[in-house]
Image (cartoon, rainbow, N blue to C red; front, side, top):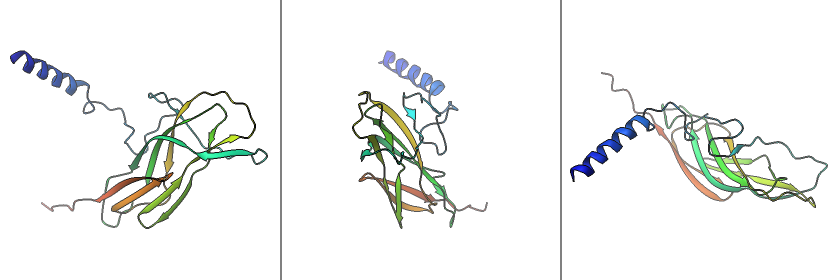
Length: 169
């Protein structure tokens, strides 16, 4: 029993030294945090380029692994609205595929985004999975309230809390 407690205490001390509390590295949950090029998770940061109008493409929904909604602040003063961005992680299925510019619409507290990928028709492409990350700023700003982002049909609720009023001590 004592040995188990000592092991637990040593583990907690090690976690306190190396855990996120002592770390100054930004996390994926942090608004505005970006990786340029290859991120530590092995995903390439993708920048959207418009399609070539002279090429015919096959367009399909983008393959997504995870979606993280990142408000600039989770708490906003009354009447204050904050920008929101979304970190999308996914994979492109071959060497020729690319992401299309996303389509966004907003009705009150519902934000709908469609993210597709394109591949040139009748082109031989190396079948190599290319993991990516994409930073999508949502259009407009968001005052305190509950919202739902739908991205390619999947729902991702998020909330902007109202800041606590000063106690005026």
